[in-house]
Length: 158
Image (tube, rainbow, N blue to C red; front, side):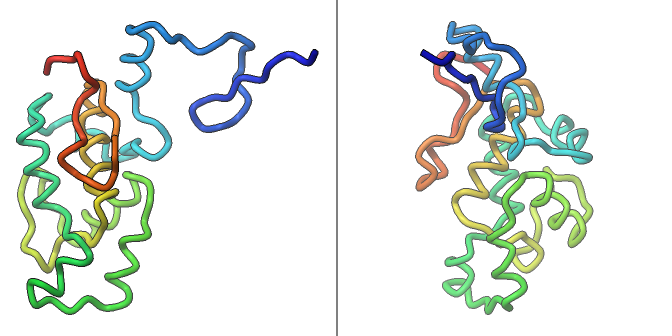
């Protein structure tokens, strides 16, 4: 029987043949580190400067940075094809690149609706997860259909 191949977080073969750490501490450590999609890249210092571990304040910050694509019409805002395409940007670092190119103010400051990045519920979940993980708070996005279901990993007090 062939040995079982382990995969890294990015889906590549793991560097070691060891099984991942499935202890409670190992799982918390895993969710406390940014992954490929939740890495802030060159904007990580901006993420770490936000209120530390204050999930409610971070959620308010996210709501002030993003605009749900399908809510724009309800608010009387017509989106160009270019703006609608923002909802297809995936990694957190790329989201922050676009957002800060449009409005370079600190992330804790809400943008006017027309200056927010257009996204979907996934973008809200990803950005909050990126903020928490940049601060070392274990977090993961669960049930991406509802932003309110994004929270620190159960059992962790922040």
